[in-house]
Every structure is written in C-alpha cells, then in structure tokens.
Amino acid sequence: MSGAVARRYAEALFQLGTEKGSIDQLTEELRVIREVFVDNDQLNTFLKHPRMTSVHKKQLIEEVFHNVHRDIVNTLKLLVERERTEITPSIIDHFFQMVNDAKGITEAKVYSVRELTDLEKDALSKSFAKKINKQTIKINNIIDPSLIGGLKIRVGNTVYDGSVSGKLKRIERNIIAASK
View: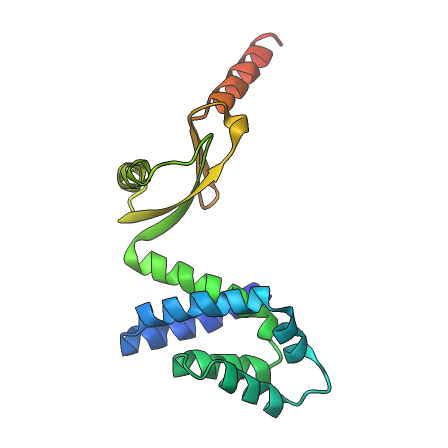
C-alpha cells in the first residue's frame, strides 16, 4: 500500500517539476534529502514523536530545509500533516525512476572481480544501452571476487551473467540434466 502512496506523491512532484522546468534542481535536492531521511535517526524520531504537534514538526521542516525548492518543502509538510514521513525515501526513489524513464536512462549493477575503469564503464554503458533500448546506463560497479572472471549485469529484475562462475554453473546444470 505504501508503495502506491509513495508513487502518487512522486508523480505529483514529477508533474510539478516538469511544468516548472525544475526537474534537475528537484533531483539534486532530493538526493540530499534522501540521505538526510535515511541517515538521521533523530529527525525521524522527532517527526514520529506523538507529543510533538504537527505545527512544530512543520516548523522544523521549514527551518531545516529553508534553502530547498518550495515544492519539496510543501510536500514534506504535507507528509508531516498526514503522518507519512517514513515513506519519504520511497517517494524519492520513485521520483528518480520517473526522471530516469523520461530521460531514457536506466541504472545497472555491474558485478566484476575488480573495479572497472571509467573508460570500461563508459564503453559498457554505451554498448549495453543499445541492447536494451535506452539512451544511457548509469553503472554501479560492485566488486565480487566469486565471479572468477567476466561480468554479471543486473538491470531491474533481469540478470545478464557473463561471468566465469556463471558459465561453470550452467555447464554443471547441463551435465546433471544430461546424466538423468
């Protein structure tokens, strides 16, 4: 249920940003706000505290985020009013997904045995983006020595496994299936 609610808030922010031409500004500011809500337990505790009035909570939001785009501040204050501040990171994640979809960008986790160079990431992004019909792929490189060699790429729920360990597992499955 909260996923659908978070998506609706994200859609509203996305529409406002699109109408006002402020998507890039919203995106940058929401990155910081997401970190604040994820990393700051004191803020979350204060916003959840039953003895603190909605007015005090909104004042805190106004003071802490006074340099932030008004649409974001107003959304946060609305979340305070409706006692839904805990879904803020989820709202922001949905917003980022909408921005990426609109720009033809997707995010991928690339598992490798060593850190990929910027040149390798760029080449991989360009070649793989064409295969999945996207403009760009943002690569998050994750080191996984268990791969032995090669790469494993995860885009959404789809995994492209070109690792040595993945190939060995496929060979093993084929041998077991053939021996039955």
